[in-house]
Image (cartoon, rainbow, N blue to C red):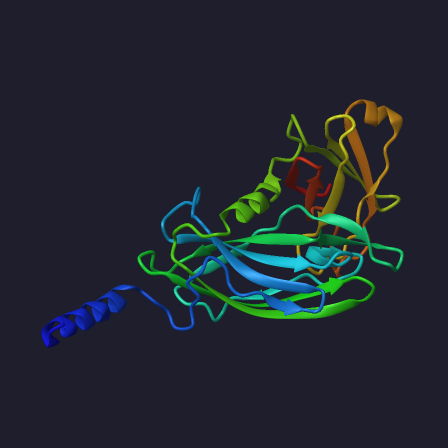
Amino acid sequence: MTVLAILLRITAAVIALIAVPALPGARAQGASAWKTESHAAARLISGAPAKLTNSAERRAGLEIRLDPGWETYWRYPGDSGTPPTFDFAGSENVKAVTVRWPAPERFADGAGGHSIGYRGDVVLPLHVTAEDAAKPSLLRVKLGYAICGTLCVPAEAELDLLLSGKDGSGGPALAAAEARVPRRVPFGADGGLAVRSVHRDKDSGRVVVEVAAAEGTPVDLFVEGPTPDWALPLPESSEPAASHSQGLRRFVFKLDGLPPEAKAEGALLTFTAVSPDDAIEVSTHLD
């Protein structure tokens, strides 16, 4: 091979490297490395930007894998527990990140109450908006989360993943997780799973919620206040035979755990109703 041919090959290789947009420290794979803790591990995954509104939006997910018998928490943990925290400040070419939450479940917290969260393997979908749609985004997150089994322990992970806006290996897992994110539906909607009524008994301080669902379908209900410092108890099932025969499930909870000076009247509550095949999120003001 002549010296000229060697120089031409080197020049072509350098041009190819310059032409590929890169960000320092990025991982080009469809998933980051696992960050392992005792009884848990976490990583980032990426997927195709299907069904998102514009080319500046990228699809990613935060996957947490738990040992059998261990749980982690939803955005509202219930009677005990700590919700996950996310710090995306170290990201590059990222304007905003929205965390989405698949439908959770309730489980006994070992202290006579119940917590809300996930078991096994959970993926929290992330909708990432790039500053510049023509360039890749480097998603970095500092994750803090708690895991509970025979005891509860804190866990941390620092993860990064390059998002090109193209398909990634996490597509199927992301699609399954997004399918379990509760649908936003109007209060009092007809058909399928729905929150039909919310009534506050001012004498007892109890709130009664009626949820419509197909007969024989298991349903659970969670409630959140207008701000994270509201610590409302989990609604408990209370199903008179008459309401059950009409396809209604009745849940009751006390208005406890309000922050100082907060008023129940007119407060915007968010209800999440979960069944094996569906999940909805409904907001309404308390009467």
